[in-house]
Length: 273
Image (cartoon, rainbow, N blue to C red; front, side, top):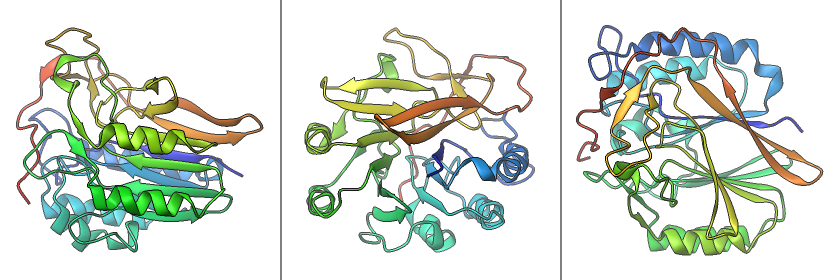
């Protein structure tokens, strides 16, 4: 079966507005759409792991809806800390079907031989993520029902990457890692870090993070790191299930990048609703 394509951290602004006063993310969506159409035979579904909008404005969600509705492959989405649940759910309900609740947009989906779980880790007004107890209970019960190769997607990562500002808490992180580590043929796939990152959480669970479609985070492994972006080549993650289990490849989009920066992120905490 064909792999699952993961993209993340689009930070879309409406046409005519630049993200962080520098990035034309609306234009980037045109480039992305062309690439997704040209490569649609290479993947079975698309998963977008949060920060679709830069500030949760409804115009950006209308643009995202128009773009992804034009594609032929299934697409699933979860919010990130820059998104707002109400307009997200209003504009994009077909990309997050049968959600856990209006207060948490977690859901599951089957794609051929694969089982996917999408976890909403958004905490309004807070930069870092969490999985509520009730959602953890639901996830635990659902995992018991499947023996398919499984991918679990969410925006935030429960692993500290060593970039000071991004070494954040994660509510129920230990419980999530412990739960997923009990199952074979499973992988946790996240966003938020704006870089390709791979680790073995608590030495027992593979966690991989997709790079950003729009803005790459400056690689700064110091206490002051994690708060600046650069215009490096954008990328994606491709998750393939092979004879020995899940394998993740990181690819690059052939979009123009001038490698300028670093520039500071501003207003990084998500909206309040």
